[in-house]
Length: 101
Image (cartoon, rainbow, N blue to C red; front, side, top):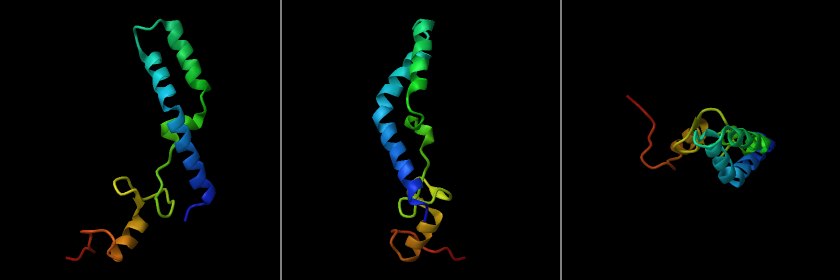
């Protein structure tokens, strides 16, 4: 089980990303647009830099929904390998069986 503080920190980042998503997208588009004057591009980059760091999407860490574990994470299922195995052993994931050959 991951530390509760790490899980909460990640949730806080997710909220910030959602809050600033539109503003970041607008500033990024302006900064990359070749039709916009260079001064405005530079100003957009400065405004982008002044936004909170945790509002960037790349700072969100993938974590297991059950245990909060960050390593061994399956994106499709949003579970860690350990939680996935436990659920599969108890037959709670349809169609998943233990391998034997």
